[in-house]
Length: 396
Image 1 (cartoon, helix red, strand yellow):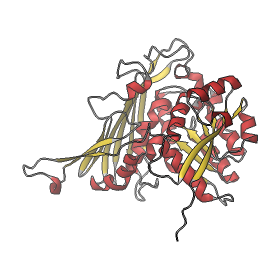
Image 2 (cartoon, helix red, strand yellow):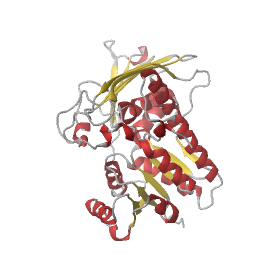
Image 3 (cartoon, helix red, strand yellow):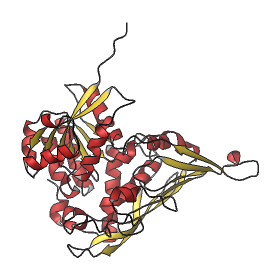
Image 4 (cartoon, helix red, strand yellow):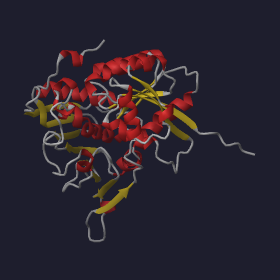
């Protein structure tokens, strides 16, 4: 008689109660029709606000176990005393390094919102600390873990042949949103804001996904992808220093499979006039936002590039033409559960479960991809003249 193993209950702590933390919590607690061997539970939250504010946040999320969730008004106290399996950090990315460093130093497994850090050096330092403390560290670049993303890397890229060109855009009218208050972190450069770090990491991630294998490896005979050109048109916020806005980045790779990537981003154009960030993200656009062009076909993804659910493949190899000699087209859909944030939670929870209670080594999930994207961010900042206060970029 075969015994059925009980599900693994992954116990979460939230450091920061942001708007993305709300979406993440809702996805964690959705009923599970599959992957029932994993269950997620929020057991602790920490905020720099009051206990009452945290309790109100839990009530707004209609948390069924709100009365048992431990509330901390000190990040340090939760990291030192809390009983949980993994901490999810969703504070502004200008303080990601500080908060993740503290968590990893306390021996905590960490899921860190994207962008993980302000630069590659900070990310590398966090990876070092994670390895020395034998914990799990993962950037919450949720787009990498969608069913459609996995299918694209594992099945589709080989069908279109070597990738020759990538066109990737993510433009969303954040700056012109009248619902943004003057103290919004999107308008404050001191929090690390700007189109490159807020939006640009997504199209850069699609470049990385298209040019590396599912395990993050690049081709052995290829040179590294590097940024060759970057420029930005700044946006005057009226409340802080100007922010990088309309930005163009050109990347290229030489070697056996030369490739060019053109990345465009903007926090002001184009977009829906409908209020509310989530509503803007659900509006259809009149052109694909990501095009991956290979020798034998092209993959096109519609807006938004952050939440892939459907794509179109057009095959133009001679063996894929129809009876009239035209290209054949295939539409592929992989439905998304909830908003799509649970996939990354399942990834890190599975790693934690499989390591057991006495892990011998650290696991840095997605280390190579996260490191490459942040290196491109560094190169683009340098070429486009995007600068932040030294304290935001500091490594210690």
